[in-house]
Figure (cartoon, rainbow, N blue to C red):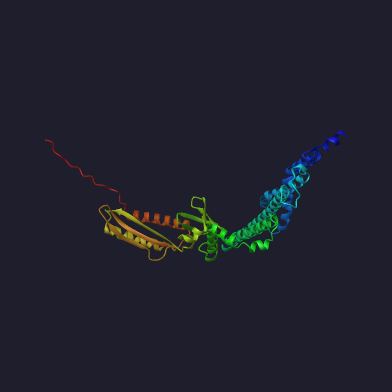
Length: 369
């Protein structure tokens, strides 16, 4: 009897029993939210299981864990506070009239809608991961660019729908009339987001003109590296130092851009400075041997330039220019190394040596009487 009287004791308009229900629901929810989240995630994964084997359930659970936990906590908090009542002396008012009760309920509705669309957006991310994994197995690199772009576009559309639904429900507005009535407000927003819109237009230009695609090696200004992703606002480039550089799409379309992956050949140009003790016969033999050596490589275009360019008091200079039909830098450097070793052998076979740097020192002698 005493126990029952204790539970019926009222404080701030609520009984002790109501407060125990409140804290009990919150405590159980906090303890079980991760477990419940994994159950919901696995149930949702069963829909994508047939197509998501390449990505796996662990990736799906990692994506869905936080949004599901947030959704569950919103529901738990709602049911917990539903066990409590506002004290009558606060004069908060009914839920159908403007006041604290109505505002609190509208905030709950907005947060609930946000949590639902967060789950939807993460599901779109998972579908995008599946399609990206399939795109990487295909020979074409075009789908590597199309899939991330389409994924971001769908996410923006879904987020926009969620925003208008939330605004319509919270403020009790007609969503269709709200969208059609943007008018000047939409124009003002567009002007405020001018730079964002320019980057968005730049992304469409990249997608339509295809100056580069995912996987290309590009150089924009001082930035050089491999394109990893092309998004709505920016392009992610893996720099030569392996750092990620995020470049706005407007800059990618306005600045001078060099696509290294589109080249068909690479040029090598260098000079060899031989000792000025090299004879004319040695020089002719060296030139002839280098031309024959370069002509023996299938990767080097015909008619390379090998000329006795100039001479001075310290050296005789040979100019060598050739084009290698090797688009990849690694392949070109390997060929260049092989050519350099062959040139060293030619110089050794002809008993030629490189010019050594020299300087002349003038000394003035004076007689002291």
